[in-house]
Length: 124
Picture 1 (cartoon, rainbow, N blue to C red):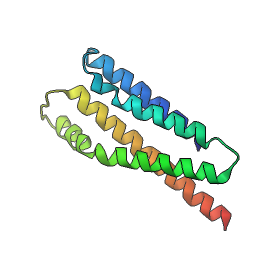
Picture 2: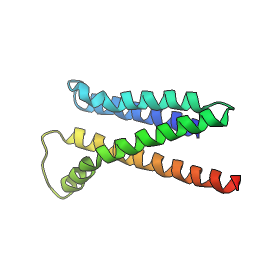
Picture 3: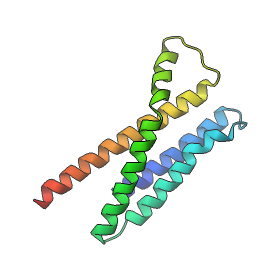
Picture 4: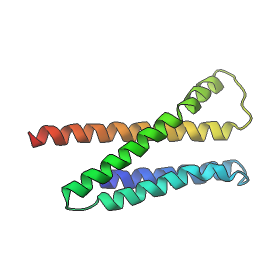
């Protein structure tokens, strides 16, 4: 799971770079996912250890942060759906970037929950 966390962080960094370039490199807030991605890279590196307690701690921290990121970007999902039905927003790339971040966060949370459940079953 540590490698998945690092991969997820890199995907968020790439998403931020694409979003920043698509806004004409004039909106630095498009780089917010890169900051979050950097956190996940750090969490993944810290979770890549033989000590199971430390690994569990960092993985639980990372899934909690991803869940908060997903919950915080739910409004962007609603806006993206409305955009697909013709609604107009002042900054469409920002809406799409936040919706993509939301989707990535949800997928990561689901992968982590599946891994946690499998770990618990295998422990029994």
